Amino acid sequence: MKTSTQHKAIIVAILGAFFSISVTAQQQPQFTQYMYNTLTLNSGYAGANRLEVGLIHRSQWVGIDGAPSTQSLTVGGKVGNRIGVGLTAINDNIGPSNQLDINGVFSYNIQLNYNTYLSFGMNAGIDILNVDWSEGRYADTQDPILANNINNVRPIIGAGAYLYSDRWYAGISTPNFIKTETYDDDEELVIDETTQFYLMAGYVFPISPGFMLKPTTLVKYTEGAPVTVDVSLNALLQEKFTVGMAYRFNDAVSFLLGFQITDNFYAGYAYDYATTELTKYNDGSHEIILRYTLPNLNKRAKSPRFF
Image 1: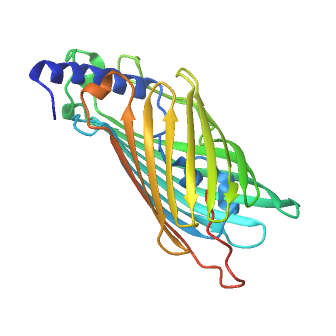
Image 2: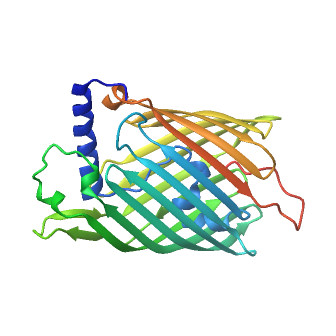
Image 3: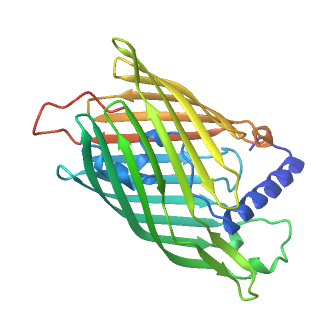
């Protein structure tokens, strides 16, 4: 941690404020490589591709004690011409808190024309939240909220619609319709689980043989929190290499690299450089993704999908 004692105190205060916001108006974890992790955001994606398995690890604000660390596992894809199924698990750690979301996913796929499809999806599962206040440091140690640890299990029900072809996609979704509130013994609000909405879109532009450009965007709205907008532009070289940049408005600039190791196995890396005051106190955020798509045994496989 590259800070003096005074800077450490500042960071503790920043993280305390960040965690307070997360507890009172919880948001889903963010991923820079969201375009390769769509199933966690939109259940309709389960019907849009062959069966695939994805793993992500994200270390945010490296160098700050208690900063967010997130892992994601997704398994999902088509099991017939119209049906898609899946499973998602997200493990999120921030300071003294650990949140585990586990969802089963089902989708129904409709062919609109020769090359355009619409997939409707639903997800259902549980959210397990544990907070051990003894694991953190706080500006106000007498805050009554800190007197009791939190151990909650809450239901999750969400839905999404995903419109796509082999070159573009657009989607709208919410991971959870259910709004829940948790109070402490003094009837003070501790957790406010609000509904969140995602809008997403992407397109692959063929520029020349072996060279394509892929712009994408993700807009997230959460009640009681600022709207978050991510935009990215990736270059795809020989259907093997990916290099690009992304920008999260008022938050971070990102650099992305990826390699299609085989037709079925993809590995990617993203680095975020914060554009806020936090950039003085951390070494950036790192994100690694591994994705494996099962081969299509019934017919010759198409070129790898880019989202």
